[in-house]
Every structure is written in structure tokens, then in C-alpha cells.
Length: 188
Image 1 (cartoon, rainbow, N blue to C red):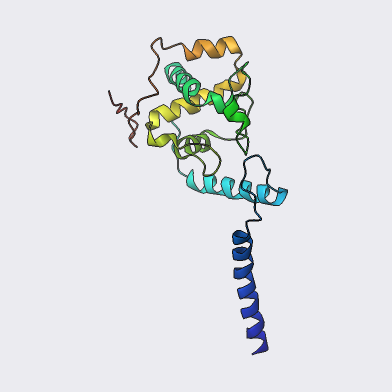
Image 2 (cartoon, one colour; image 1 turned 90 degrees about the horizontal axis):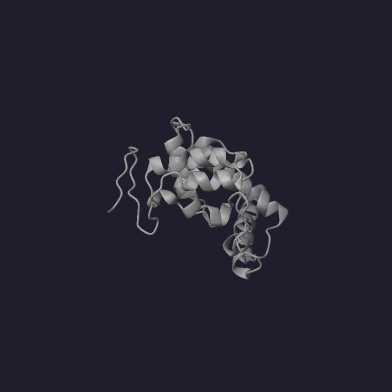
């Protein structure tokens, strides 16, 4: 009986302590207050494992098509560069205010194509990374992935040339169609 009572007390304490901690307001949610090393490490493990589980079986299309890369450059410039930077650019006010700081995609990152696709499509909660899959179809997202893979090797002139390669710019103020079959269904 004493052993059961001990386990019940441990269970009550294990439940009560997090509740007391949360309701005490001790945890600082301010974006300008860094996480402790323990919290940051735990968040990274949760993020990495979540993405790894959800990207199993993602079929990666060919990503070396110059048109796909140019389309991705155009999308990246309009949607991503203010947070993830462009060759030769300075950090934006938006980027400076985000915590955790978004990865600088002008530098090589340790993320494969499937993982990059999933992050762009679904976003990451409480990080400022939006779910672009709500407004863009899979082909547009794969175009961004294709471009991001090339981005670390680009200088400012090469970047600008790719961004402008299609001539007419996409209108990113309107919603882009979304589907899972890879076809464009843009609203006109």
C-alpha cells in the first residue's frame, strides 16, 4: 500500500508542477527573451523528429529544371527573402524581430529537399514560418525548394537575374491555387 501511495504522490506532483509552472507566468514568451538551453534543445528535437516522421515517403520530383528554379527564385524573392535573406541583402526589420532567428538560406543548411518542401508547405508553429501550402500549390513549393538548393552558390547579380528570368512577375498579393496533384490552379 505504501508503494501505491508513493506512486500516486509522484503522479500528482508530475501533473501539478507543470500546471503551477504554466499558471505562474514564470515562462517568458517574449520574442526578445531567448529560451534556456534546455527548452531550445527540446524544441529542436521535437521539430526535427516531427518533420522526419512526416516526410517519410515524400516523392521528390526532378529539381534541376531551369524554369522551375526561375519560378522558385521569383516566389522566394516575394515571399521568403525578407526573413531568410538574399545574396548581398541586409537583414530586414521583420527578420531582426523574429525568435528563433530564421535560417539564413544564402548559406548551406542541413535540410534535405523533402524536409524543405514539408517546412515550406506546412510551416512551423510558434516560429513565424507560415504554411505556404494554404496559398500555393505543390509545384510552386517544389520550385522554391529547387531554388533554395541553388541559393547558397549565387551572388547578388546571379540572384537578381534568376528572380527576373520570367519577365512578368507573379502577383503575390492574390491567393495562389493549392492542390495535391501538382497542377496549377491559380485564381485569376
